[in-house]
Image (cartoon, rainbow, N blue to C red; front, side):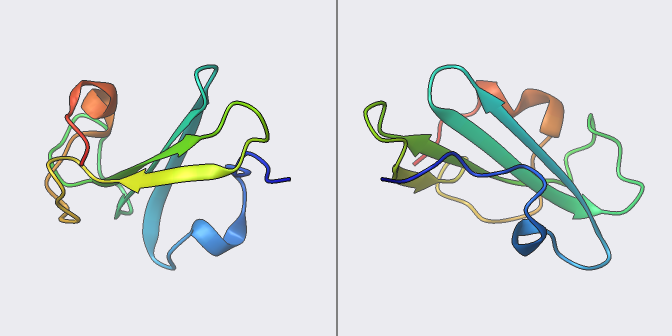
Length: 84
C-alpha cells in the first residue's frame, strides 16, 4: 500500500531553493521549487503534479506543466496549467 507524499519530506527539498507542496482532497499533490525569496506569483517556479490511486494512495503519475521541468511557472497558478 502506498501513501500520500508528506509535504515536509526533506527528500523533496533542494538546498538553497524555496519549496512548496499542497495536497488536495482529489488525490493530487503539487510540488514546487524556486530560488529562495521568489514570490508565489512570479513565473520562476518549477512545478510537478503527483496523482494518486484513490484505493491505496499509490502514485499513478508524475506530470509537469506542458511537460516542461523548467523554472517558468507561477506557484499561484499551479492548478490552472495543463500537465503532461
